Image 1: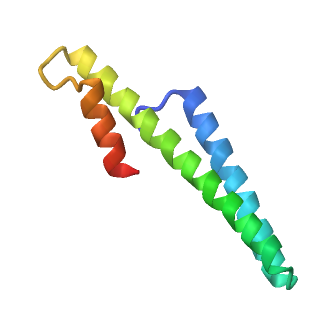
Image 2: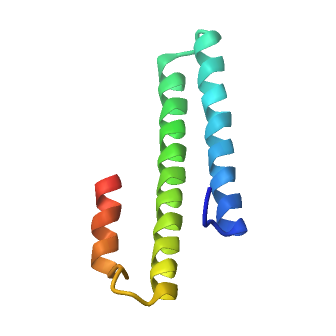
Length: 91
């Protein structure tokens, strides 16, 4: 991921790996003919983990965008309101 500090990248990768593990649990549950409740519970966990990873990626990109605008000092700097609007278009 471009313009991402190492700590943010590590957190994002951890979330994605957690989602990957949960997805493997869903696959194993389906393969083992587990109950619908168990499969849906695991699937919901995967979905939440992916959502959290996606939001972390978006937030990191938005912070980088703000920093770039600050460094350039031009009129391209995004206001908090513009960042919120951008974020909501992606969610």
